[in-house]
Image (cartoon, rainbow, N blue to C red; front, top):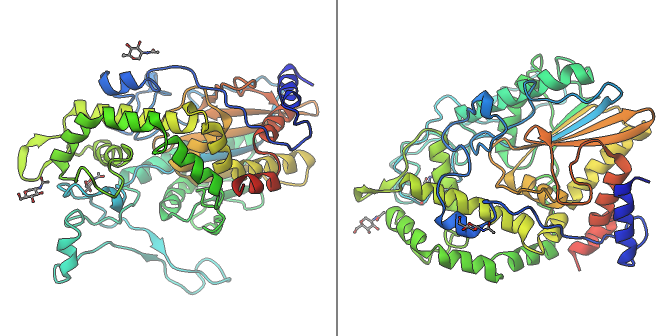
Length: 471
Ligand SMILES: *[C@@H]1O[C@H](CO)[C@@H](O)[C@H](O)[C@H]1NC(C)=O
Ligand SMILES: *[C@@H]1O[C@H](CO)[C@@H](O)[C@H](O)[C@H]1NC(C)=O
Ligand SMILES: *[C@@H]1O[C@H](CO)[C@@H](O)[C@H](O)[C@H]1NC(C)=O
């Protein structure tokens, strides 16, 4: 038993909860930084990273880039010493750049989103497979002025030819590059084919179509010889990836952390002047019921989507001299990051909340690793395309030392290694070993049983998780 495992084990017995699967969530608070300092978020200056382009200069790669977060690349990849053999890799990423969501587009939109010629593919295939008897079908968003609702409900949609949301042309480019970069690192190390081989690889998406749009670019870069593949998807009634499985206790905790907590309500009221400026420009009612004033999410999404696509910051439609300034946008970005750090790491209930929210996916990951170790599975490479609502509770469950709002393309990689009949795990965040606040510290060649003990200590068994969600 390693020192780290001892620590966990003594912690568990201290709490009188000995036994393999008894979950005893312990919250290890994150490191103090500018991100989780609300005074700095509200009154400081500058953005918490890059918000204007998908490109991060090589000498800054690894820095936070909301438009295109750092991921594993050959240039920065650290190959472990020779006695370690890479056995299995599982990646989870957030989708890449997209248009805003329809629900976040209430500024009477002054900017059109162009997707002519680029649209989601739909249709269904027969069991005979590729080329058998059906035609690929691509959607083209359209409006028609004879439909009165087009102009009444949808000023934000007029002139735009995208679905809201839809991965943009730039987001699709980023998805292809992401796939190529992963291929450059892992294809030779795992001996992956140039085509997608379902007996050794698996791709998984959520029920939100933008994850499939990303997969179509990703797979182009990752398995360049394939043009049509099957991806895994779970029913929205129990999907663990997005996640959408029902968990009443998690919902209660979310309320307790946000609108039910003093800290959350204080931050909203302290940001009152900022809200007043934003509302006067956007025309959003100060007492709206669509969530513009329960968090900065909508304003953040709105402003960052524009800036990441080199579109100007919005102005008031009646008075083009009243515009969102870069200072206002940067403050929204700092507060947005503070909100994510609070919800998933700083709030005392954040570890329990994250664990209930993402426990099912982590149990699936543990199962994949166990099956690989026991020889039951021949899988080598599994890739999940998901959301910020997936990456955030995963980071909360692993108790990352410095939380941020996971930007576009954010990536966590689980690498399983063997060394003379023992197994180790390395977890990469932004392409580098993840620092946590737990007794496991940096997740760099952690003995696999220590990692499993940590999961057990947080989640317990599947039935423990189910019971905890319904308590
Ligand atoms: C938080 O930020 C403010 C403003 O920059 C600074 O004065 C203060 O020392 C910071 N607090 C901590 C705990 O670092
Ligand atoms: C920003 O919000 C406004 C509504 O307030 C909406 O019309 C617009 O489409 C949004 N834009 C983005 C980029 O989110
Ligand atoms: C523009 O002016 C009209 C008429 O006064 C008003 O109803 C509307 O709310 C204004 N829009 C914005 C975005 O301020």
